[in-house]
Structures are given as structure tokens and as C-alpha cells.
Image 1 (cartoon, rainbow, N blue to C red):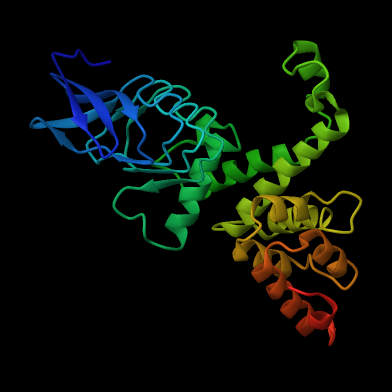
Image 2 (cartoon, rainbow, N blue to C red; image 1 turned 90 degrees about the horizontal axis):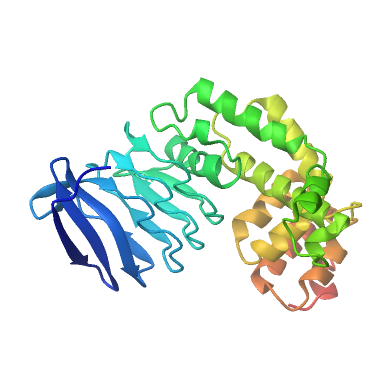
Length: 307
């Protein structure tokens, strides 16, 4: 950690960044406020911002997007840990020192975007989602690698880690959790069926993520992921694919398009899906009705259900 010689504060729209300036440049070592988006400037008091300090944004309850400048070369331990709403990080994909747990328990983290090219589509967007997932879903710090992200070797290691999680037994870890007292006695988390359902939901989220951002995905791996999702659509013994889409992405059309392309809407399960949706998600219901009418020859699909 750099030695701070001058300390100061920099106003944001709804908060304050605390900084220190030393021989190696400026360090952001604290933040307080209610900004949902914070853009860290590249220069403060004529010095390049080179460090994000230890626990600088720890446990911020409002932060949704953080943008770091090209000048940053180090992010210290737990800098953004436990930021419950953080979903997008914009930073330079270059060599930098990374402390431990910088995004620990940032469960909503979806994208880590290369600073300056965040609007590009295709490969770069896919990699931004996969890179974020190394921290939020894979718990694979060794894959948090800006310089090699997107290479064939990196993608192979990413998919290998993913499949190791997909192949875990749903009940694995339950006994250890009970023995270690990680959950309160009597809570629903202590119920094996509930525990296994949550593990299946985790797998569904992971499989959908990789299929929706499928740069470099091998056909054999694609097939395994699709098979898993189809085994948990509406009408199967367990329905986590459908539950995740309905409960977590209820009005996001791209997930319903994904489900229909996957083959997860059939003549056998369509009516039950409509009943689950009830009076909610009217635009999504309309999309599924149109799809069903076109692909399953149901002339009365729109008449059978009122939006």
C-alpha cells in the first residue's frame, strides 16, 4: 500500500471520495454517500489515480456501477466486497495488482467491462460477462485474468470449472453446512429439499449465462448445458429452469426467447406456464402465446387465455 502524504475529499453527485496522494500517485481509500454510479477520475490534484484502497467501497448498499480509469494499477483487498447491488464494473483490461476478495459477496455482479470499449458487441461483451462470473458464480479467482480473458486456454479452463460445478451432486455440502452451523436452526436452509433446489437454481443460472454468452463454447459442452436446462423446464419432475426465468427475469423478453429457442415451451407444458404467469407479465404471455400458436398449431391459444 502506498504511503499517503496529502489527504483530501472529492465530491461526487451524492457522496464523497476520500483520497490520499503519495509518491506513487493518488489512492482512493474510502467512499461515503448514496451514489448508484461512481466514476473515479483519472487525475486528482494533478496526480494520476493509481490505487483503489483496502475496503474503499466495502458494504456500500447503493452502488450499482463503478467506473475506474486507465491509470489504476492496483485494487487492494475487499475494495468492493459486499456491495449488494453492484452489477457492472468498468475498468481497463491491463496488468494490475489485485488483492483478495475484491468482489467477495457481490452476488449481483454481471459485467466487468473493458474501459473505453464497453459499448462493443460480440466477443468483448461475452467476455465481460464470463469474467464477472469468475467472481460471482464460479468462485475461481485464478480465472480473474484481464490479459488472457477470452483466449482459447482461458475459455477451456472457464468451461472446465463450470462443468465441475454442474456435475456436483445437488446434496453435496449440505451435511457440512449443518455440522458447521452455517445456518440458523429451524430455517428453511436446513431443509434438504430446499437446499437441493437452490443448488439446481445455481446450475440453471450458470448454464443460461454460458449459453447466452457462448463465445468459444464447444458443441459437446453446449449440448450438456442444454440437456440440463431442458430437464428442469415446466412439466418436468423439478422445474428450476422455468422458475428462474419467471421469478427472476419475469419481464425480460430475451430470457423467454432463449427458452423458446431451447425448446422449453411445448404443447404439454404451455397451459401450465400460462397459469403460473396469472395476471402478471402480460407482454411475455403475449409472446409465448404467439410462439405457441405459430409452432404448435393452436388456433385458439389467444382465445383460451385472457391477457
